[in-house]
Structures are given as structure tokens and as C-alpha cells.
Image (cartoon, rainbow, N blue to C red):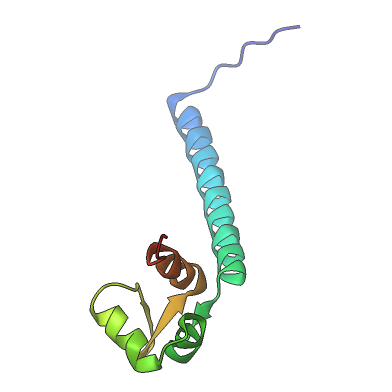
Amino acid sequence: MNRIIVLSEQQAAQIVKEAAQIAVAAALNEWERLANEQTASDPLLTKKEAGQLLSVSPSTVDKLYYEGKLKGYRIGTGVRFKRSEVLAYIERNKIEN
């Protein structure tokens, strides 16, 4: 059996508003979940750790960062480097035979 429901403009607006709030909350929760998942699988490295991964000194990591060759993230007063981006830097600088 089909029913026809008649809503006032205010009632319809309220339903749309509540649906939008639910959708936005769900999207934010999913974004936060993905961000946490990404951080867990792609840790931030200190200058020393990035240098160890690259087999260079921390001062060389600094140089790469200041030259814009390696992307860094300011955390407090220090700079951190995503492990995946350090590995991508290595791949970009691979020498082909």
C-alpha cells in the first residue's frame, strides 16, 4: 500500500538538515579513521631516522629539506618526514643502467 505524506516546508527543511548533519558526521569520522590508519602505516620520521633510511647524515636531510627535495612537516619546533615520502625520494633518484 502506498502512502502519501505531506510535509510542511519547515518539516522538509528540518529533515534535510538532519540528514546533512548525519552525512557530514559520517564523512568526518571516516576521514579521521583514514588519517589514523595512514599515520599508523606511514610513520613520521625524525631527521636522524630519515637520514638512517637514506644512509646520510641528519645535516644532509636538512639540506634536502631546505632545497625542497624532501618534503617535511613541522611538528612543534621540529621537522618530521613521512617514511613513504623518504622512500619515494630514493625511488625518484634511482640511477638507471
